[in-house]
Length: 164
Image (cartoon, rainbow, N blue to C red; front, side, top):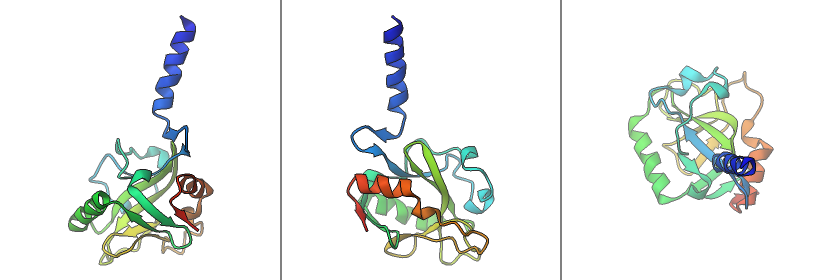
């Protein structure tokens, strides 16, 4: 009986791990559950304090390619449509997202607008421009480029979409 209980418990935990056993931890971009928050309101918040949406906004299956040197990426038509929707509704402070690999939160980013009067304090995707690219944070106070995290590199390489 105990063995059955522990096997069921292990199965439940594995179902929510964000890890595909065949391919390892998966890359994803999550929006926040509270869609009223702007990126500028939460720049200083610890990542673990942010409540993520239930499902990824961009999952690894939505990506067609990712160029590591420039951080340009291509997505499916469905995600392109979602990004087009964001173009119509953007606050000046940006729309926050969190990049994850498996259950690990790697960094906070923002969907940003070229017309914003603010400077992004986090890596950002200017959703008005094409191609899609995660741009480096422009703040002189931030020296660490979290876009180059080795966990992201490995996750993208494992699924075969990374262009080096």
